Length: 172
Image (cartoon, rainbow, N blue to C red; front, side, top):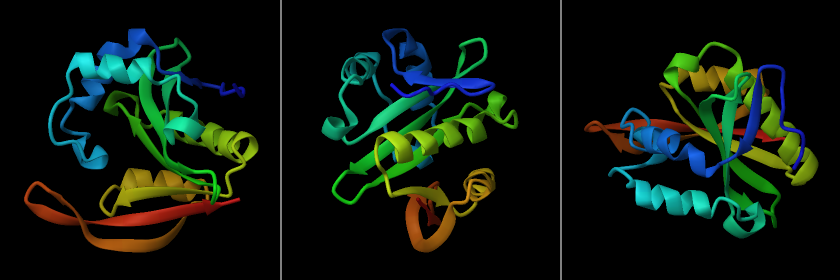
């Protein structure tokens, strides 16, 4: 795979030993809004997911990278989803555990994946869906030249309220 090593982080595939990290992140209701999760995942189901994580992005249409800091501790994940090789586009989402925010990890991970998708997957455009009140994500994606191209009004229903979702694109 491409060199996915930065100054302070590295990106790697999911491994069986990531089960506790994955179980914690997937079942943390603080993150459910961005993943559209409504019920907890069992370790059994997550083990099956990890066992299938070896699938090629062309087959699975998605890929998850684990973001590790310089001591190889998982600090977050960055996902490619809805991969469409016909139109050369893919969605991108990033999740960083709160205790690792504001250390530059998200910026570095996003830079590495942008380079990877443009160079190795021949992607023409990346897109991100971000809730309108997620100021940290908006700042991150705008910092890396993603452009706001639309607003999906009342797109998400969470905590008994509707929220707008913003659509950002980065075109090669």
